[in-house]
Length: 97
Image 1 (spheres, rainbow, N blue to C red):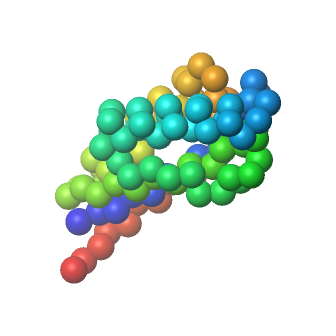
Image 2 (cartoon, one colour):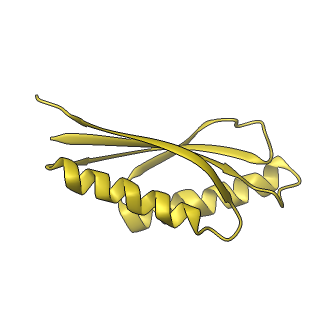
Image 3 (cartoon, rainbow, N blue to C red):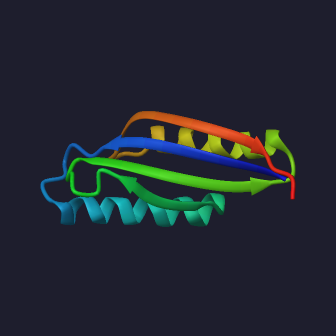
C-alpha cells in the first residue's frame, strides 16, 4: 500500500473577506473530492482571507498511480480561474501493515 500527501498554497486575490474565501475553498474542496476521490482539508492560514493552504491524501496499491493522482491534482489547481497557485509539496510513501 502506498500513501500520498499533497500540500498546496493558493492565493485568492479577489477575496475581500473570510466569507469570500470560504466560498472558493468549498468549491475547490468539493471538486477535488468528486473528481479525484481524495481526502481534502484546509490545514493552515484559516484566518487569512487571501491565502489557502490545503492538504490532500490518497492511497493506492502502487506508488506511480498515487504520484500520478497527486500530479493531476496540482495541474488542476494550477489552472483554477480564481485561485492563484503558489507552491506545493508532495510525498509518496510505502506503508506495510
